[in-house]
Image 1 (tube, helix red, strand yellow):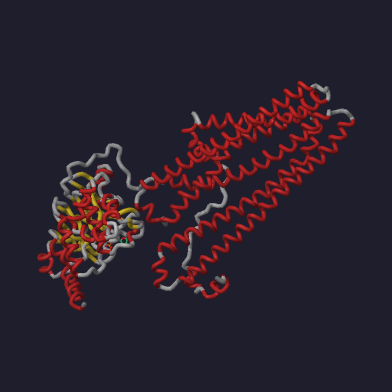
Image 2: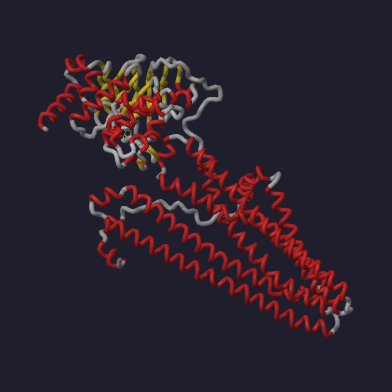
Length: 610
Ligand SMILES: Nc1ncnc2c1ncn2[C@@H]1O[C@H](COP(=O)(O)OP(=O)(O)OP(=O)(O)O)[C@@H](O)[C@H]1O
């Protein structure tokens, strides 16, 4: 597709719709406290994997340091100059043995350090997911699924390199560097000083170059995160995009971000490519100094040929740790940004907490009471303005009222997805803040309007209500609800795979599944957000029958839209802007000729008009 054309045709008003919050923190200064917290993830491995890796790194590094000395000094100076064949054979055997040990050591170094890195990332990702899962609804209200996903995956991945190679390489490179400088100095201090003249220049230039390279890679990540967010949103909203024929705009935006990704990638590659030749040039300058000054020292007999050869070996090795340490420093700075974002999530406390001495709710009767409950999601608006209501065990109540009047909010507070700003919510006389969240929620089932179907089979989806239920129990629940008939007709019956969201099922079928799920869970309290979608009469009858089965013997709170449900309820609460304005059963409220009467009349008129 031609990008320029796509861009030209795209409507700028629509293009402005695509706004993705800048999630990427570009650069963070080095922070010891944060680093210590990050390194604490190595602790579980401090007894076995970490010391094993360190030992093997030290062994291979020491061998690397020893070989040039043996070759240059002992072989050349002694064995060859003194024509000592047996010493030569011994030295060759030693070098061969050392190379062999080094080869084995390197194999284990790579294996163990990678194992260490992967384990740390596994732990970090697990911690992060477990913690995010424990957070309250308000956390998810403020963030998109895409941005949470990016933190759990991308940010932990960007720490992977640090833990896999970085931490261990720092040790190796420092030992290597100190070793090389120490040996070079002991071999010839003047020659060491001479070749090191270029070190400060190299350091200055590489630092600047590296900073540039780092920034380029960071902008690659930023555009990639934007691309991910857009892709995620596009796929989730594909049906709406197609129905409003917005593919063109979507494509143009995608193309724009895709082009940005390509450009920033090319830019980073270009800068990266400059780095290696630069290191090679400095290396070459060092070698020129070595040859020129070394030859001079050889002539004046200040050094021997053996020293000269060993020196050449060490100089070749010298740039490697320097260049790698710079790279690790970059990794550290990037890790700072990622770990800050990870710790920000880990430090987030669930707004709905549990008391240390919280009670286990057992043998629930299902008595619910709201005492002067006030609640706001944010400072600006109050969703509930002093709600008082009481539901007796086994009663079915309906919450009715215009959209946004606070019906779902009442349901949210019963399950303690949020805590009341003031006032109390009591279950069986206990303030729900004094009960463990697990025992509270185990006794409550929620059937939402928009039923969530997980990817997996039908049977697994129903079993979600009670994971230890047998196949027979699952099927019995589905049969009782009347879902069995349609399930049997599916290609593989109960074992039919449904993809995430259950797109292959109709709205009514999805609802029957969620009823079966709730029936299997067998809660004492049931909260039902009735679907408003118009369902044909036959399905409506099926759902009503299923509903009767589901409500039997439980306290039920129904956010009701269907007249039939409302009429059969023991009590009806009419809400308006966060207040209960009417309360009673159907007959009482109808004779009252108030808001409820108007609502029902309007629904009748609508049904008649259809
Ligand atoms: N997560 C949230 N964050 C901030 N405000 C919210 C949130 N959820 C709901 N609200 C606001 O709280 C008020 C009550 O919403 P609630 O969902 O309880 O209404 P409702 O009666 O269930 O409406 P509907 O029948 O449309 O589902 C509304 O003004 C809504 O905008």
